[in-house]
Image 1 (cartoon, rainbow, N blue to C red):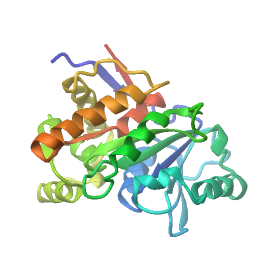
Image 2 (image 1 turned 90 degrees about the vertical axis):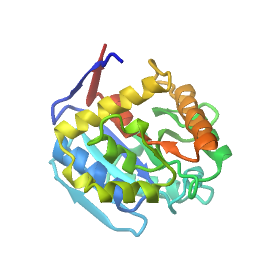
Image 3 (image 1 turned 90 degrees about the horizontal axis):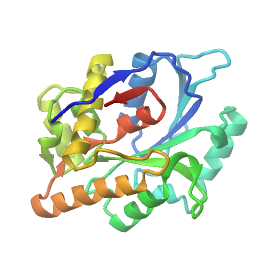
Length: 260
């Protein structure tokens, strides 16, 4: 399989304001912190569902910065925000933390684990609607791009260290954590070199699914194609291929550059 050339942008490339909405209260927040303050050099703020706010790597009047928040509970259905939790939190980000949500690129980082995020209909609906990081779907009042990890965000960690990680099948996020722990693999060791491997693994995995081109202005068809591939594999083998779309957010922001 012919590899495309992948490079990582400079640590301070201008990317504007970026909001990540995640389900986990620890792992996703720490992984994103590692990426955006160690590999890249941006102001990074987090406000979790326990109302714990913390800024990192403070910059004066930053042109580029990252904010990470949780949904109300650790479940993908909470993206739909029936009780207005996220809407209220967005207002708070604007008024209290002066973070312009309405002008930010927004990414939702969630898992597809058959033991937790189990509602396939909701997942498919959200993949269809949350298809662009900066523009709202004309049929949906929220903007953002939904990026799944199969079966959990630890798939991104695995791709930092394990070549051909897509060939590994795992049932649940819990089992994947155990698999990585047994091999002493964790997000704390992620650096610029391992991050490049993760980007290469994602690109290679997409090719294994028959995906060679995609449109980041409208990612719905590709997202649904990935979902269908993983669901068919799960139905047949009772496991997901290790795969994460975390790197796609960095491609969208111009921080990972892929050339043919």
